[in-house]
Length: 78
Image 1: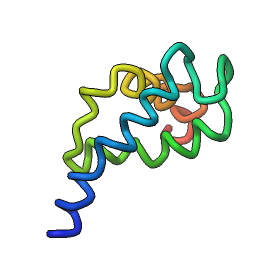
Image 2: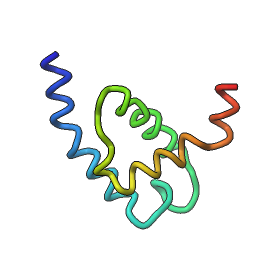
Image 3: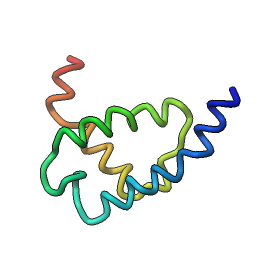
C-alpha cells in the first residue's frame, strides 16, 4: 500500500507536465492524433480507476476524453 500511496503523491507533477504540453493544442504533437497520444492515453486511462484525480488537468482531461472516444477504439470494444 505504501508504494501506491507514494505513486499517488507523485502523480500531480507528471500530470501537470502533460497538461502543459497540451495547452493550446488538441493532441500531443499538434492538430492530429498520433501514436504519442495513443501511448500516453493508454496509460492515463487507468488513472481514475486507480483513484487518481484528473480534475486539475484542464487540458489533459478533455484530451483523454478525445482520445478515448475515437471511433477506432469503439470498434475494438464492440
